[in-house]
Length: 354
Ligand code: NAP
Ligand code: ZN
Ligand code: ZN
Image (cartoon, rainbow, N blue to C red; front, side):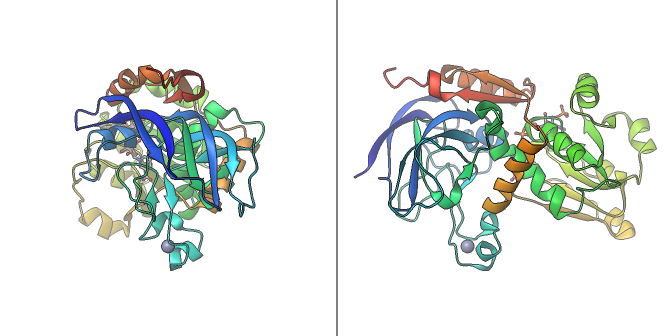
């Protein structure tokens, strides 16, 4: 028996969201149902509601930075009980048996099921995200939100947090002595600065927005700040960085970023523009440099990330908004007008009678 659910959905490429009644699967024996309290607005939500990547199937109920409180657990659930504070990020399923799944890299499983956007769960139902009253997910794809971290500020860690934490670790940029560049000081970028600093790295922000300099340095702890249009500043930093995390959501040139890397340095692409970027080859060859990608993180690492955030007092800077503000929030996000992540107060403001 499916359960009646309520949320906000985009119906077409206009990307405008409106109230939407739908159904979720029954809580199975390994499933956990939780009441959604907060959901972050990731730039991916904007890409998906507008079908920027050509993979959206409407209606789309976005949201993959979801936190809430458990209301029901299946008979074979081992890790969670009613009342627990939990989170769901970008994935809600994987095959659990391939090489990646066996190595706690469910996020790279060929059968990985996205939290929303038209993905089909294994039972054939379409997944829907956290701009909604409750979620049902296999317990394997839930993380525990540690005590001591506010639930609203915890939400963006489920995507923005893990997306930057994972490559900082995997590419060895998590050490004192490493010099890390963070391109784009948005939702992902500002969390990346906080994590990289907590890991002991030296951090330089590369931004199109000179007015973010003071916050980057004084508030987030960056060591320096480069304005990407200032060629003199960029030139002065040539060959100084061990790695760069690029979080930019739109088309931009890679050549200046590759120039900032030392020999053998890595440019890690996590931002996902809808158009292909130009990849200059010679500077890669001469410096044995690499341009690589990274997609969120596995479930074990996501738990590790949120525990690390709680231990080091790392929380995203958020603007909490009511559900009926979502279209304005998405429009503001498209213009870069947010410091630095919108979080929807679903628990108090999603009203199914509207
Ligand atoms: P966001 O809050 O909008 O931040 C993106 C930042 O990029 C902006 O704040 C801006 O920073 C910079 N930027 C925007 N347009 C630009 C342009 N035309 N040229 C240069 N810089 C520009 O977005 P977000 O939520 O952090 O997400 C960023 C991207 O990551 C999106 O494409 C999203 O889909 C993707 N994403 C990927 C993963 C993954 O697993 N790989 C996970 C989550 C999100 P400045 O003002 O500092 O320049
Ligand atoms: Zn996201
Ligand atoms: Zn798998």
